Image 1: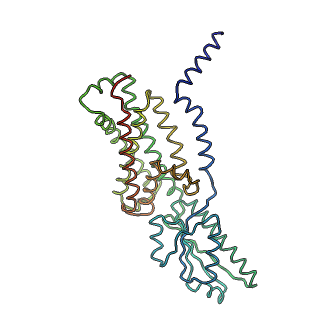
Image 2 (image 1 turned 180 degrees about the vertical axis):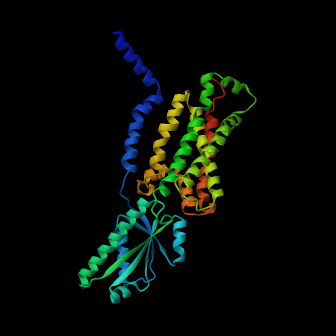
Image 3 (image 1 turned 120 degrees about the vertical axis):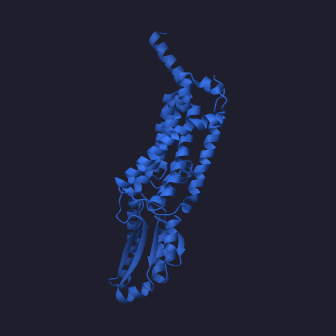
Length: 368
């Protein structure tokens, strides 16, 4: 065998022995194709809609039946008073509320005109625009059918009301997502090299023979990066408010508390990577390239999670940025207090505990 072929064979042996390299070469392309194929879609289906129907006549029932038959909407709730509409949005039970006037059909027959109010959550302006257009189209089709049956020029006007972001500013949607992505990636990358660096420069022996236990070593490694991450948090919040003009409509203290918990989760995630890898290069690759794709696609940062297949919706639950972005939108854009994001806070705390526990279990107390 020639030296050239021998070198090729040797390189193949090195690649096949390195399972991480094999995963990157053969596994990541498959994962990317699946994620991009299922997660990226501009079509919005199964949007949750609530109905406020004080009239409850034949016309309103037929319109509601059209919405139920549509692939674009799922009727999830009937609202019994106008005061409940705000509560529907605060609890994230629906993306759209369709409110009929009293004596809707009677008004339509006597005057030839009637209004239907479409109230949408505009924290994501693209989604709000799309679903209100879908709803207006369904209402228009019923109007055309009614005019064809009675030969009367009826006019049903959808009156659109956009909550939380009436100016339809795109920054209201992407700023919470960018906050989650930046804080997670930067924090994870910083801590991902913390323990690996000790291994590479040969100072890991000193740590292992010190009186500190593995848990203390892991937490001590995280503290400096946590303080530096707080500086990053302050910077991005100031830029969001004073440069991008995204207001903090809710509690500033609640927003900071959620952000600090998310920073801890991100740092713990990077620490886990640091305990699993043996080189700074691999650690940086995992904490940047591997984490970035799920954060962008499965956190709700750009693409609505509700439009994805069920298995991807379940998978998105393990993405910490999903819970953080949801909490930031509720506090920063919708103006809710911290009690409305209690679920997100508890999930992030649980993730932090689990990540620290796994890091502790994977921490090697002896050098190989």
